[in-house]
Image 1 (tube, rainbow, N blue to C red):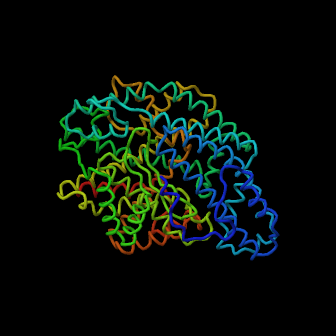
Image 2: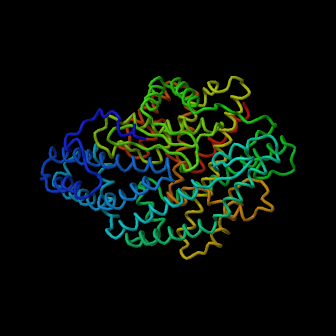
Image 3: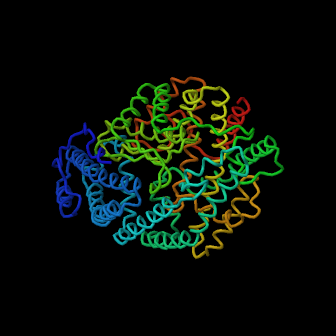
Length: 572
């Protein structure tokens, strides 16, 4: 991990000294106070002030990112955890108050109204929203929330299963669900479920703690529900809860029937009267699991080749990340679950974290995170740090489009056309399944945060009811407890409340980018890249338009897209 502190920095500091002390707030505070004291009485001074503030935010943000990366890569190292928590308590808490003061300086500047609207309207709206939401009393609560989510990461990251003579992480156990021998899949699935269920009380207690913290945060900010607070905090200026309900209805009427149709075809191919939970990932024709690579070096080699075929510069970006140690891909004990892309703001370089175990889905995961990384490369020349980060709904278009565009070249990993088609089919079927799952998770969170005072039992009942609405046809008989606690495995519910429907909105945008590429590949890729270069400088609908997509996630968009996906599946 030391390599991350030795990255090249093309963008030199102009406001800050070459080195900063991140251990004590008293050493950083003078730079914030100096900004507070400046006169902001002209457009020129205000614009330079924004650049200096951006430089300061980049430096501090990168230090926080580095500590988070180290912690997720080694959740069992107490010194790394201590360093991360120290940053949260000593720096991040003070930083929130200091940044709030700077935002107020901007909003109070007499030159604010003279700034070019096209350039600064998005930033102006964001800073006004931040100031409106800020409460001093929430700083300590947000630190407690961060510590609670880290407890979830540490707990899940520590879970292993003794299976077939060796201890394996829950991520590593996923590969067994692709094995043709049904009894082996069943044993693996049961082993994981039983291990998770042993932690259900701890997970429920942790979630209750988080609910209480989040309720207090919302109340302090003057909101009746945490749901309404989070919609503002997540800057959902272009859509609201009613749009989410339209998405839920569209999924129920369009996506779920297709998902269940595909499951019935699966059952027929497998010769089963009913599917069980351990029958959903295996190849229905009994073929052995796809094994695109053995070592993660092969995974990177293949994805460099694939992304280079989409656009030569993309392959170059991924190769740059490898050469600078910006890829941490192997699954191992003590590593946090899941995958993410983090931005090192000052170096303006991306870092990718994942838990690869050699399965087909790992290829898509790296292509997905690579798409996020390309977004970072696309905005490197943007001077304002705020504009280098696109809104989540479009950031995921960057990643999901790369999955689909790169998926046209999977022969890099699969020499046989049969395997290539299998992988493509699994991807498209997975899109259908994930849209239904996102609707279930999103509807669940809407229910949780608009039903204060509900009990854990009521929460589990609601999850089962939503599974009947959005779930598949698989039979959970004998495993009702596992079904009722199924939401425990969705880290977003614990760590990133309400951050999940963005994936669905983006998936529909990415499908549109991909379908455009079927007519004009070069044109679609150019539109995609041009949209990435806008970063977060334009509103969501405009970002989607620049990428050649419509910003809509209701039934009218879902229906034709699902029809095209079904047609592609039939062709495969």
